Length: 160
Image 1 (cartoon, rainbow, N blue to C red):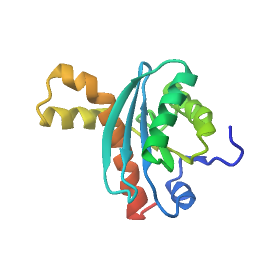
Image 2: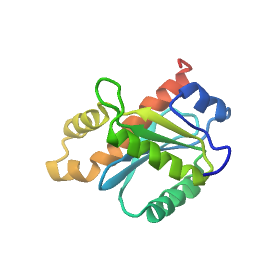
Image 3: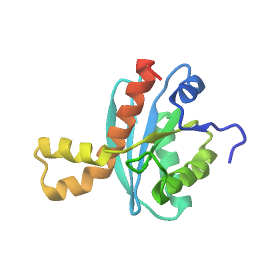
Image 4: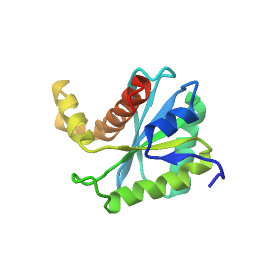
């Protein structure tokens, strides 16, 4: 891990690490896929991107690094799947571990509470009249956009 990479669950710390804003990469880490989304440099809107097959970390890192380079990403927001009571379970620990490993990208990382993100993404896709098959293809990247939008709403709004 890069020595000075910020990995935090605190939005204020993350925002302070990026005083000039910048494009952010949102990640919804699943057991079989990685949903990705990006936002504009002014932190106004998140857009669903690709859903990547999850494999060995080296391959996952290379795919995410390519997206970061292509889009000029300045920071990463990773969904943190907390239990409904706010406690951490195995999936939250997996997200924290993934964040520590992803620190090699040398970008600040915000772990963002993702409770209800998949439910919200599913509702959005149903409202857009996507078929069940199309929803299955897009749910992870759309959930990444929901996670990222929640984070940038907080970051840009200044209420931390």
